[in-house]
Amino acid sequence: FSINYNKPMKEIKFTIMLIFLFPVLLGAEIYTMRIDGPIETITEEYIVDSFKIVKENPNSRLVIIEMDTPGGFSTSMRTIIKEIMASPVPVAVYVSPKGAQAASAGFLITLAADIASMSPGTNTGAAHPVSVTGTDIEETMKEKVTNDAVAYAKSLAKSRNRNEELAEKAVRESKSYTAEECLKNNLIEHIAEDLKELVKQLEGKEITRANGKTAVLKLEGESIVPLEMSGRQKFLKTITNPNLAYFLLIFGLLGLYLEFTHPGILIPGILGGICLLLAFLAFQVLPINYVGLLLILLSVGFFIAEIKIQGFGMFGVGGIVSFILGSLMLISSPIPEMRPNMSTIIIFALVFAAVFFILAFKVIKAMKRGVDTWEQGLVGEIGIAITDIDTLAG
Image (cartoon, rainbow, N blue to C red):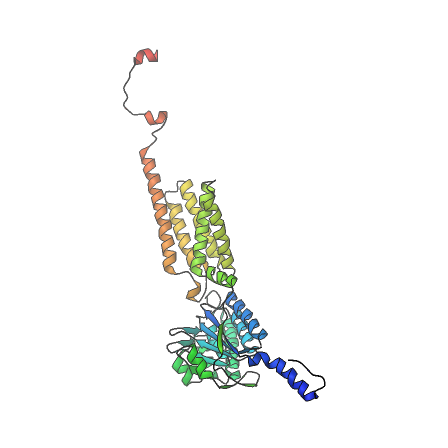
């Protein structure tokens, strides 16, 4: 475009307007984000970074957050909700695929969206607040936290003209609702089989945003652009899997133990050190109980003591008990997905128990056999004299 200064001012203004509208005329874009698993700091960082891309692109017209989560940290949840509320374009939350859930923190994020939608066979709710360790909160504090969460849920529901009564019950009574119940009782606006059907349902829909402004969605023929986690975020999300973090901790301790007991092997020590550091990196995100971690370290000490000192099996038994208790306490979270599987703990405990009993059996067998080297090993043995014993003695 060029501006002819000899033209009337109206034509100049129209030309300038075309320059700024040109990106829009090229076509809008629908951005999608994906929340899978517990909501923690990595998920929070991913959502914040994704919304930066949305804000920088004048072609963005809609954001769809696909979600399947058991819940997570309230601090991360509130940050995500702030991003949704401050978004320059409408935001839809879509609980999918079939069989997915938006529990606890996921329920409040769904309430905060401009458009709430679910797949058939999904559920949401169960948003009663609990402590990060899953233990009971002191009664007065529990009441304060619950009332705060109820007020937050009701304010989100009110800002989106959704059912405040059911939102309160989801928090105060841990009620959970199916997709059909949510649609019937005005907790969501749409039930869609898949993402394409949802976009089709939203075509031409007029929505009122939290700030009171209205927007009409024109989405037909527009491209859907997925915003994925960065390589760093995917790596951190992977190692913060509680089962993997637990495995890294145990493998790291075993590697360092082998290196200390057999200096010069190098490979177990190097791998063990790397695994241990990665485990501690994961523990910065996961809710770690340090008493559990100390119990696991104590169990390793007991196993070493059993090998070095004859404790008649007591050190080994103490090590196994300490290891199991420490493993159960290591990651304290009310969300099962943020704790190691019991099967993983049992497998490691059985491996340690098997190693201990094998070593104990070898030690007992060696003790029963007696000394069979040097002069002590010749005592009581039958020998054949090939020279004159008296002469040799004289």
